[in-house]
Image (cartoon, rainbow, N blue to C red):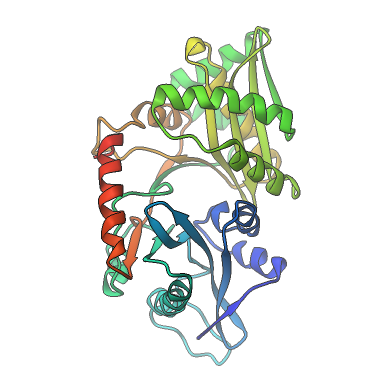
Length: 352
């Protein structure tokens, strides 16, 4: 096996079509977005002869606590076993692929003066997958950057069947919102509507006590994914006032609920339920196989900050997917500083 840089968008995207699970965090456009935010990236492919076995988008992150390399929801591997051109079978492809990638990442990290490598895998959480990372010297990260548990709704049903698969209260609130003439839903890709979303997004962050992404972050995400018609802003108006919204990425065969916001004073007006239903219908219209509600809280943490949001998401029906915990590969003593800072941050935010 060998590693090569990939510069062909079609090669990258076509390979990912055959991968599952996957998210847009390994898409070509997420790499373009990362570059628009001033981050250095590498698109790596693992090849056996001329056969592409795996891809891995790597982002260099420069933070106050140190510099590190991050692999978000990767690496992506097409199958659990590969039949390569000379008919030999790779007995444990995940271990071998991750091992060769780790070697390459350590070289890049040395050149970029990174103190550790962080991998946020989207591999199924299993003893076998956890053991692969452990054998290679990875340790559990003090915090997760992206969801380790996601709520997924499969879309292989009619709209009526999807509605009847929801919690009774969720279905009732959707229908109530549909009948309310003072509620209007708008789909958009305009910067003006993103500004409206951002206004309520900041208020949401304030009363839910989370650190919001910057407007430039959301703007760059919109502009990059809009070029391929892979993103929509959903805004809900109540009595002509924008009261809730969502930013949804539609990539390959999935819809991803990436950002959400709502005004607290209108919490009893079910606009957020109708927004999600419209986003789900849009996913079906685009031929998506699933709709991801993104992250949910672990069941064994009843006081988790995401508890209310998790109840909301589960009401639409679906199933959970648990991924291997975020892993770190320390490379220098500076990693200990990062570990302490992130551990304290986790405690402060109530994720313990």
